[in-house]
Length: 115
Image (cartoon, rainbow, N blue to C red; front, side, top):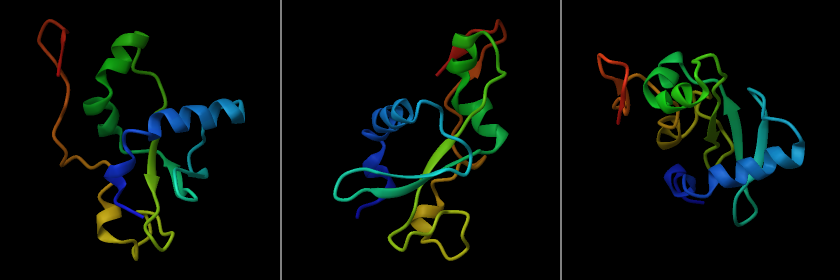
């Protein structure tokens, strides 16, 4: 079925289409099946607050506020287990944002964004 990284290019568009068909945004804890070859089980989770601060700085700048909800889509392993399951395959557990990831954006002293 492949590793999670293989889906990162097609997923944003597929998930946007899925939400349009639902007529609403995804909710935390909601599961869905998307992707080629019969699809892949996925779940919307609320990532740690650090994910918003370090990986979505452009969103706050664009919206003019940091008051927005953030969800992360994680994929189940080959056995259908999600990263929050202790028996989930270790490769798939790495999908959940942790503070150990490199910070991709920050603010300069004047408030300008850098990437």
